[in-house]
Length: 298
Image (cartoon, rainbow, N blue to C red):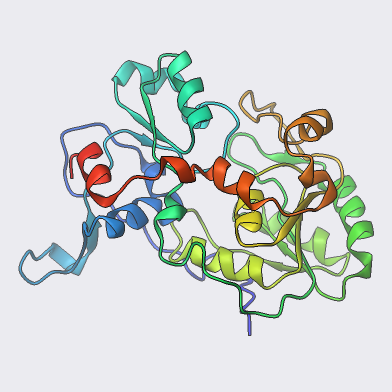
């Protein structure tokens, strides 16, 4: 039975800092355990090894040199981190697909596409065995200082679409949980949260949540859109796109209906397109263990 986590801090843990390094790295490389995923793939994750003891029995791994894309983006893949900082430090950006790589290089951000970290897990393409029920809503989320405003209109539109489903679940980002939770509950949704970006087992639990439902809906194209299709769940754009109090210059066109009609029409129809999902996640750019270790100087 699926566990619906209602406390954002249930799985929280402190950021697992990398071993000391001489090159520039980024805290966001650890979002959603993605550095850990890549390190485990390369057999480069240290868990209190008695032969190489770490004070306090901590868990570590080497740092990723440069900036790792941590979520799907239409642009460079690293827009949200500030391209100028990356450009001026002369480090590499590790992005998901060839489009991200090309757009990053066009603005002088040295970039190499390696595929999304989730592709480096053993459970990424497992066959689904559960009995999916109901609808899962994954709305856009706030990211300081770009906080969502005026949730009510979208929630009302979403509730109308979900009215025929007996099970209605909403997954909220930890920053929006306390504010938006009662708004969704007023319309009969069960609200859950996977914790902050460093929460333990984030992506594995996200997979379980998505697979427990028949369909995933949202107000914009997001990382979860492609995860859902990769795992044979339909994703559909429903309602007006949520907006932020301060306009986010790098939010991308993911909520624009004309963009969707031309680029991802299946998201307007609620159809599954696994090939597009894997392409956006960068399956053709995925590296071997030796290739990845060489790129990261591991």
